[in-house]
Image (cartoon, rainbow, N blue to C red; front, side, top):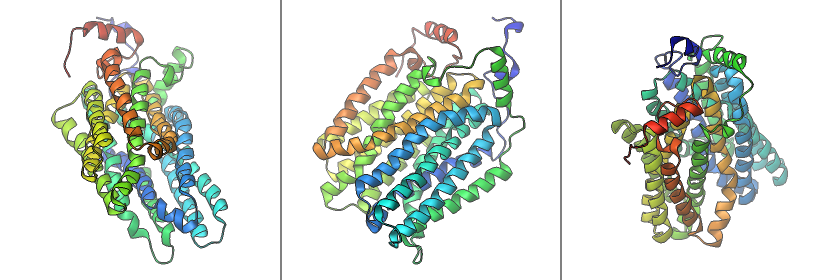
Length: 441
């Protein structure tokens, strides 16, 4: 047992540095929810927007790819700022970026749909408006996760992060459902983005008035103590405690993007139409993801290592089904099964990364996770091209990647024992040595 004098300062202990105030989770959850509603709702009306303006489908896809690239670059930078300025200011910045981006998109769409500007000019303005969200909007997710991690006991953190991840699934249901409501007579196809901006502005006010955070924030004190103790730490992707979770998260998220981006094309190819059939498949997937994150994980008290394993097993089986039995019914069933798997995998690597580091590194770890969630979307057009060339191709590639990740989670010690308390490389090695005889799927 370590001597008392060897204990770290209170601000650096791997314990909650503040209590999660009543209602705080609902506020942080709403931040993620409104972002998911806006993004998925906007995706559901983009085909109509593109046709109304005259923008080609490939250019519409490029709008999201640039935003995702900027998201991947900016997320770790904002995470570092959150350690200095606090979590709440970064959450607010992310919402402000979302609101301004959506308002600019509204103006651009309106001008394009009413032929005030040529399609190519509208495309570039749309690209810039969406890019604004990619850069500033990425401040909120990492700050939100760090806010929860700092206020949650280790044994409750996986549930908390899984609950937060459920916002994406719920947003996937709500966004496409309410987007048509905002297709108003005067503003037309620009209505949904205006509606999403107003919803986000309401959540911004809620955060501003009701989300508690002391000043200076505990993270600031922890950061100052860490700076006094040594040089500036290396980027998280170089940190051996977190790197395996980032590798797993990037590749598994890429597989999820491949299925999500090709789903609509496959449905149209099988049925000759999309519309409600695509929406039904998306809703089935969203419900399955919520069932995983809000139901199974809590009922069975699943640890990160269990989530990492079952996530790739279920998603891999779903991709096999999609590749070899591509009927509409099987497409929907497979998409739901894969969403169940990804619903395990996402909180698995997110919570695993959080639990692998101590409190002073929570924002940096969350920023790295947020970064890879954007980075995988950059390659989305390649998945569509592969599908056009050979429809089973994206799913067969997914099967290979997910199979490799299943081997990886058993071979890599940090993934094999994810959810324990390693906060340094030395502690990680000792933890693995202690548990070298443990097993279980």
